[in-house]
Image (tube, rainbow, N blue to C red; front, side):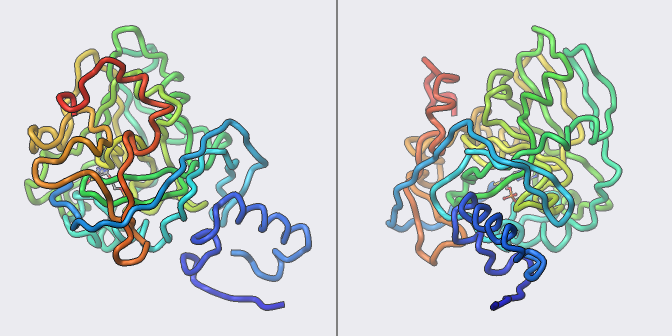
Length: 336
Ligand code: MTE
C-alpha cells in the first residue's frame, strides 16, 4: 500500500474533497484497518477586480453524524452545514490573516500571534443577565458538544475562504447566562496585552477590538463560537482560544480571542465603525449591491484558488434563507 507522508497541512484530501466525502472515505479506511498504517493524518483596501465567477451552493440541513476526533483530542460531530466549493487550504487559512493586534500585514498574525498566552483563559460576562461574573473557558464552552461547520468567510476587502470550523452555536452559550429582556444587543471584546501584541503599539484601531450583534442576530442558528478549525484547536492567529464566526456578515464582525461578553440595551460601539463610520456600519451584512466607498463588493477573490479565481458575491454571503428575516423591512444600504 502506498503511504504518503506530508506535513499536516499539505495536500490533505480535505483540501480538494468535500469534507463529508473525505470523512466517509476515512471511516471506510479505518474499517479496513488502514488508520494504523497511515496515521491519517480592514480592512484597509480591497482586492483587485477581475471577472471570473463560480456558482455556489450553500447547503444546510439538520442531519448529523457520529463524533469525529482529532489529533488534539477534540471530539466533534459532523453537521450538514456544508459548502459546495472546495475548502481553503489549511496553510492559507492560517497564514493569510487579519488580526491587527499583531500587525497589519497578512502574514504578521502567523509570525507573531504565538506570543499571546491563551491558557488559562477566562471570559467576563457582564450586563443584563441573571448569571454574570468571570468564567473559565471550559465553563463557557461545552467541549462535549462540539460540532463542525463549514462556512464561507467573506472579508470586506473582497476576498473569501471556505473554512471548516469546530465549535458550538453562540445561542447555546448565551442562553446559559440567562439574558434578561433588557439585553437587546450583545457586545464582545478581544483580549488586550500590549507586550504580547506588537500591533497594539500603533493606534490603527481603538484597542481593545470590540464588536457586537443585535440579540436576535446572536441567537440565529448560524452564529457560532469557534474553538477549532480543520479538526484541531484554533491557531493563535485565527483567534485562539475562542472566536466568533458570523458567516453572513463581513469577516470583521467575527471577533477573535474573546475575553468579554456584555449584554446591553443600546447598540454597542464596534471597532471598524469607530475607525471609519462612513465605510463600516454596525450591521455589516455581506451585500454585493452596496459598494464600499472605495471599491466594489460585487465579486470576491477566492483565496487558495488559482491566481484569478473569483466568484460573484452573494447577498448575506449565500445565507439569506437563514437570516433574511432578521432584516425584514430594513433598508440594508442605509443600515450597512
Ligand atoms: N478580531 C480581532 N480581535 N482583530 C482583528 O484585527 N480582524 C477581523 C476578524 N476578527 C480582526 C478580528 C477581520 S477584518 C477578518 S476578515 C477576520 O477576523 C479574519 O479571520 P481569519 O484571520 O481567521 O481569516
